[in-house]
Amino acid sequence: MNNKANLNVGNQNYEFECIKGSEDEVAIDISSLRGKTNVITIDPGFKNTGSCKSAITFLDGEKGILRYRGYSIEDLAEKADFLEVAYLLIFGNLPNQEKLDQFLFDIKENSIVDEDLKKILESFPKSAHPMGVLSSLTSALVSFNPSVSDLESKEEMYNAIVKILAKLPIIVAWVYRRAKGLPLDYGDYSLGYVENITKMMFKRPNKEYIQNDTIVSAINKLLILHADHEQNCSTSTVRIVGSSHAGLFASVSAGISALWGRLHGGANQAVIEMLEAIENDGGDTKKFMAKAKDKSDSFRLMGFGHRVYKNFDPRAKIIKVAADEVLKELGITDPILEIAKDLEKEALADPYFVDRKLYPNVDFYSGIIYKALEIPNEMFTVMFALGRLPGWIAQWKEMRENKEPIGRPRQIYIGEKYRDFLDLDLR
Image 1 (tube, rainbow, N blue to C red):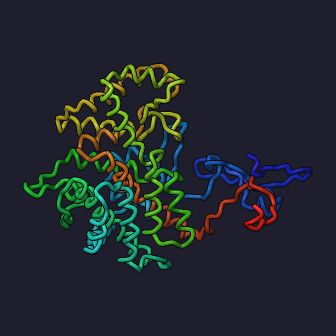
Image 2: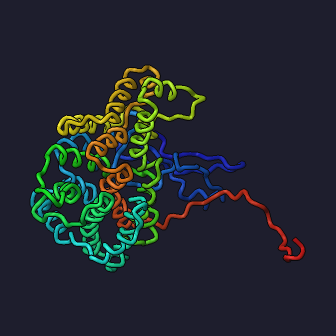
Image 3: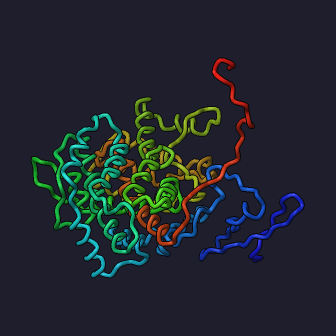
């Protein structure tokens, strides 16, 4: 392949280097474009723009491939636990037992949140969306941990990493328990990372907590599958906020806000809301399948297809098995979940959806699991944020270590040209 790209601007020809990634992806390096030509590119949504070089996640949407640091998502979901995957994403390699034990110990040692944070949580109205609360409390953590604001040394960076990995699950559990009217509590120092998250969320004050391994396994898989996904909206937000040398906690708080939108992290909530709407209409899935195929109808079948994956979402294959296991284990007979099964079955057999590769995606099945666990719809995106935390940390850390410049996109101005100012009495 020619490692140069030629661009003609006016009558002048300019050469730009081509960069080839380890998986043969090719990019034209236009970092000198404006300096050479006084011309910029325009790319709404950055669909054709690479903002960085990253060694964290590889995604091939056409082939349905997702890998973290070279490891397939299938192997990681089957063989690893979430904390191993978090370590892999953040530090580049899977830990041995000694490193994993030390990582978990350091997280546990920081698994305390200042009690004043409870007062902030209690000041929010019950009607506040959990994602807004989570973003605010994550940002507030900076006030209680001022040393994490602007990090330079590896030691400072590591301390900030274990602190946010320790404290965010507590805040997530508190946000969930407050929405459920349950007392706020800390976890169990003796448990593993995901086991502790599960207990913090689901323990009831009036009976002994008994761990359900099927539920722990499903949550472990959900967190792994959501841990990173290349340069998506929230990840790009974390990197661009961090590029100003904002601290890790503030950058993650910004990522949570970006994730909140229903076109991003809110998609799994939208799936359940769609299923509820179908149930309220009488539960006729064939009627809504026809509506989805009708171009003149505004109805959209949520949880099918994906902007990046033009084949089956590899995460969906994994989480479908977990969803089936959870529903079987809990003996769920929820009409909404029955509607979901019918939609899935019909879509996988309908040529319209199969030909267009509109397969159920990870949001479809994750929503089903959260619904089965009686997690409120508004909390679905909070669980997504908990899973995405290691990816945000890894991307922020990589950006800082690579000394990337502050993010500053350009624009094409289409407003008014120069206008003389008129005094108020002349307008």
